[in-house]
Length: 80
Image (cartoon, rainbow, N blue to C red; front, side):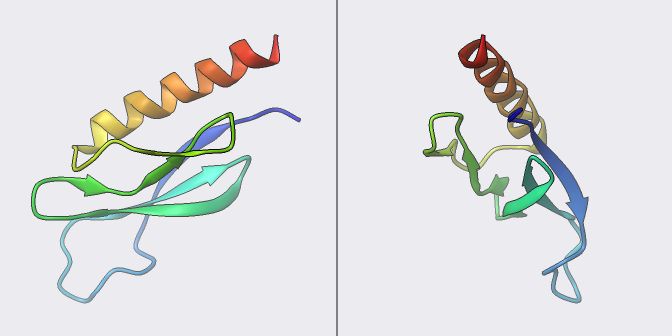
């Protein structure tokens, strides 16, 4: 089965006064978690191709997108 990780902007789980969107973490189209904005950046876990969870700390959404690309590349390399 192909392994595809992606982030999708959502308003699910947001409080009324939250100005920054949250992001659903989707693995093969199924929601596995959510990134939310904390004081200094987004917080959340990303699944790894080996079955673990990756926490990169409070970072901007760009850092999470780069990490998602790296994890997808790693999964492709493991499959070959």
